Every structure is written in structure tokens, then in C-alpha cells.
Amino acid sequence: MKNSERKIAVIAGAGPAGLTAAYELLKNTDIHPIVLEATDAIGGISQTVNYKGNRMDIGGHRFFSKSEEVMNWWQNIMPMADPDKTDRTMLTRNRVSRIFFLRKFFDYPISMKKETFLNMGFCNMMKAGFGYLWSCVHKLPETSLENFYINRFGRPLYEMFFEGYTEKVWGVHPSKLGADWGSQRVKGLSILSVLKDMFQKAFGTKKDNQHVETSLIEQFIYPKYGPGQLWETVASDVKQMGGEVLMQHEVIGVNIEEDKVVSVVAKTTTGEEVVFPCDYFFSTMPIKDLVPAIKGIDVPEQVREIATSLPYRDFITVGLCVKEMQIKNQTAIQTYKNRVPDTWIYIQERDVRIGRLQVFNNWSPYLVKDYENTMWIGLEYFCTEGDTFWNMSKEDFIQMAIDELVKIDIIRKEDVLDACHVKIKKAYPSYYGSYYQLDEVKTFLDTIPNLYCLGRNGQHRYNNMDHSMMTAIECVRNIKNGVASKENIWNVNTEKEYHETK
Image (cartoon, rainbow, N blue to C red; front, side, top):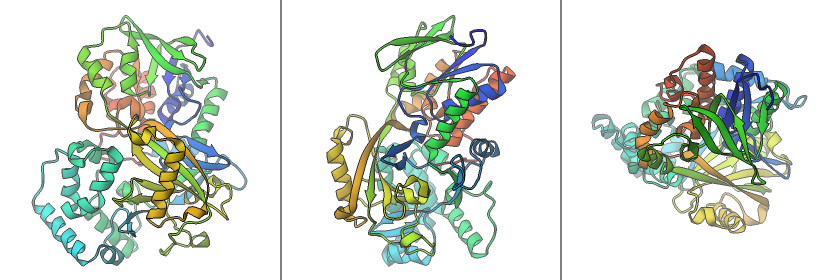
């Protein structure tokens, strides 16, 4: 083992949390990090898939945070520079996301523009107005995500713009999902915040991005070749600084002696099991997989049952290279060949299963092999491992996806030039079922002093990239300063201020 005289931290997962932890250890401590990644891809859900020169961002990642520390961290890795002169650079991008509903476009978040009311129609507009006024004087107990949204937008707007889409994403009706999800993802978003934003724009008031609701922020930075480029750069830097990043090493065992992690067992693609002695173990692997992997200590049966039944939502993206899209730019934004300006389009139509559409040309022109003559788009579907969608053949799924976009008049079938199909397991920790007993698991895991749970899956929390990074930064800070408590690590993304990257 390299550097045997130094303390060793084994890190499960080469996503944002795992790689941030490795980088921070090398910068701020004398601890040697060994990152074990189960797959052949760097970045986790923040990876970039390269398909024949067209690059696909899995899920879409806006690089914005209200944490100055995180913003500086990103730009230290990839500074702002002339993208034509260097590859290791960040671009400044405009955030344009809209809702496609009733075969028309609506601003996201919903705005109070004239076009919004015209597209909704008079009856829907009146229902929405009275519904919102009623929600102002009749607050529901926030025992579910449904009630969370109704309290902020009124029932008619909730039913039009939130109910169906939320069920597409989670596979569960919002009435059965916890309000925790809303409190973490859309803390400050409401009709009042939308109106405030509208008036600021109308009177030319300059926004302070540190205090504006994150869903209303209009610019972000973005790596030239997608988010995976940044994390591939970090992985390269970690190795150059003396750390290790080992691909296709799946953690299958966590050995405990005298209540501490003493080694981690990883399985390679050849079936070989490799033991890594360690002084610290940072886990970004799903809690559902972590708890059964723990050996040498009695795991309470209740804890095991809660952990292994934690719900997740999986994710499938279809990348389509098309000659052009049928929808055209009807905004005031100038675009190449009058293409739509959106990075994301939320598909609220109830007669198709697609949840969201990405236009990669607008994330970065460098993601597209032939930017001038083709459009590279990503069709996002949410599913559960083992269900009909997950088990559908690649060919059938791609054909279904194409047919859905044709059905809602976004593309023509004859314009499709090529396609790819990507599956991501456990992309979204879900907020129902045994999630509400997660504190019992957390309490047990915290009895192991040198085990740290970081990131989205490591904490079973719908963290964004900056949140995941902050769990790692806080963890390394604790170790450096001799802080035994892990509360500050678990408390990332439970604060009132919301940091968003995606």
C-alpha cells in the first residue's frame, strides 16, 4: 500500500462529494485518499456522456451556488477564460427554462406576463387567481408535498403545473410525498417571490444573486464540455497531487473492529476482491447498499430494514441528434437560426411520459459535434429499476421517445439522425416510505466515529452538486480541526437559505 506511514481515507464514489473530499484532504491534511468508483465513469450523476462526439449532461447541472466558497472552488479548478484558446474553462450561460403545456410555452417559474394569461385562457386564469387568493387565507397543514405547493400557488395552479409533473418524476402522487422535498428544493418560491422578481425586472432593479430565490436566477457558469469535464479534471488533479482514483472498484464490504472502520473491500470487474485498510471511510454510496455491507458489528434489525427499503427513483435519458426542432424561438432572445433558447423544457403534457427535455446546444455549443447543422437534445424519463420502462429494450425505448416528441409536435421523425440511451441507477433519493425513519439509521451510523456519509446518496437527501460538495468540505474541516460531531455535515441543505446548481 502506498504511503503506509500516512493515515488513509478510503472514499466510496468518484462523484462531486467523493472527489471534493479527496481534493480537500490533499490540500488541507496529510491524509492519503483512495477513491473507489464502482463504474467506469467519473462524476456520478454529474458525469458527461460522450456519444460519437456529442456530449450529454445527465440531468442538467447549473453551476451556481449561494456559497462563495463553492463558487471559488469551481473557478479555481476551471477559471473563466477564452474557450477558443483553452479547454479547461468555464462559460457564462443564460438560464432559460420553460414549461410546455397545452402545446404552448409558459415561463418557469410561472410568471405574471400577459402571455401567461393568454395561454392559460380566461377560465383557467380566473380559477388560478381565486385559487391563489383562497390559499392565502386558508393554509393547509404541510404534511405532504401537495399541501406545500397548494399553500404557495393555490390548488388550480398546483393541478396545472405541479401535480402531473411531480408524479412523473417520483412515480408517487404528491399527496404521498413529504413536504421535506419542497422545503429543500423550492424554499422561497411562491407567487409573491415571482411578483417581486417581475417588478424588479420591470423597474430595472439589479438583482442580488445571494438573496434572490434560486429558481429565479438568470445566469450560471458551466464547463466548456459539460459537468463531467470538471470532475474529470478534479480526478486528474487528485492523482497528480498523490491521491488514488481506482475505477470499476465496487465497495461490497466495510469491516469494523472495536467500533471503527479498519478496512474496505472492493470487487473488481474480474471478480477479484481487494481489501483496503483505512483510518477513515467516506461513503457516498447509497445508504441502502452501505448498511448491508457493514461487517464486524451488530446492525440492529430495524436499522437494516429501514436502510434496505429506502426508496429511490431511477433515470433514463435518450439523446437525439436531429436536423432541427419544429418548435421555434418566439422570445425576445436572439438565437442561432432562430432556435429555441431553452436549456430545459419541462414537459407537462399528460399524454406523454417524458418529463423534461434538454437542448444541449444551449448549455454549451461545445457539447454538439455539428452545432451549426444539428440540434442535440436529451429526453429525460423517470422510472424505478425493474419496472416496465427500466426493462424495455434500448431500441424500443428510443422509438417510444421519438414517437412522443413527434406526438407533441416538437420534432419530425424524418429529422432524427442518431440516438443513444443511458440508464442511471438511484439518481433521486425519494421522500416517502422508510425515509421517515431515516434518523434511526443516521443515529446508528454516527456511532462509528470514522465513518462519514456524504453527498446525495450518502445522506439519502436530494442534494444538488454544491450541497454534496459542502458535505465533503465540512467533513474534511471536522477531521482537520478534531471535531467529533457530524451534525454540521448532516445539516447541509437543511438551512433556510438554499444553494442550487441544478
